[in-house]
Image 1 (cartoon, rainbow, N blue to C red):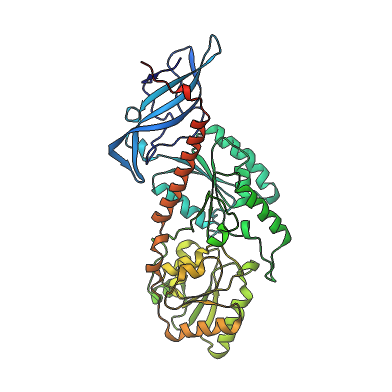
Image 2 (cartoon, rainbow, N blue to C red):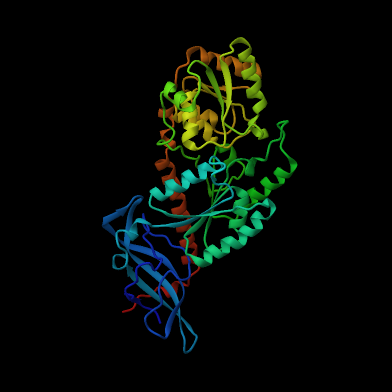
Length: 444
């Protein structure tokens, strides 16, 4: 039996939510309530098209469709036979304005996330998740944690399946390729993976060479990109590793509310630092080989030999607010990494107008551009020391904040939502193409 009919009023909280910018859909059992008729139950259902845009109400990402065509397969209990029905759904019947604020539900998976002991650990994942929430998405987290790290990923496979059974999500967004492999163990919902650097480029050791095991892991992560719905990378260098149409270059955002210039004297007073010293900031764990701490230490030592007021501060495991204060208190950021994707520290320093001396890695050259007192150097002590000394002779701030406004939270979250929308539209198209065309015959 085929027909175009108006379904019974849908109960609030049924799971079908507002879709912005036209229509897209995700195949998902249980998004529609059962028919009130005792002999009919829905087997599968999905959105196949949107009609009659509502011009009166809008969410933060744009207008949504008031009406939706729902294609569903139903089964009569008596005969156990399947038939099809085409429903025209009026969203206004079952969505209140409060409910309509959430138009997409995303499960973010990550193995790194801030803890009380280490508030800096994965802080960029939290920043992005909160930014997406402010943009109107309903976001839930699956943080992979455990004392025995080798069991973290196998255990997460079962955790993910449980979450997808318990709740209805439009897609899964995994941070880091290794987590993406876990996310792709299911095909119920689309998967978006954000690659961050080492997961595509390999892990660098103390000698500046890539570990062999990491190249094998990177190869697996590259292969993963063929099987996910979209891949987000941090730089063009990373995008070249994949060379696929579903790859999007979207560097992580900067929280302008947290990372903003503060008077140097005021920041030093809060942190208990000397008002007279010249501070160099190394904002990373010195034990991580890729950060190349020995170069920063050697350059600072060479300068301190001539000027004892120069001191190198090593800051990590700080809250974002604390790190922002250090960036306002210090005179220059020293960033001598071997390899990066799109280092957040560089963008945060730019937002605080802190001068930078860095190696030419990731997208650093593109981010700092021609900003005054921000320099790209070859990785040697004399050149680093010379550039740092040049900055210290003036001790002025930069205008870096004005150069990275395109990386604020609103702009970046908007681009990520566009990726989500494209993924869901593509999925809808595949589902529509796989459905027999004679199923869409309206009733007289």
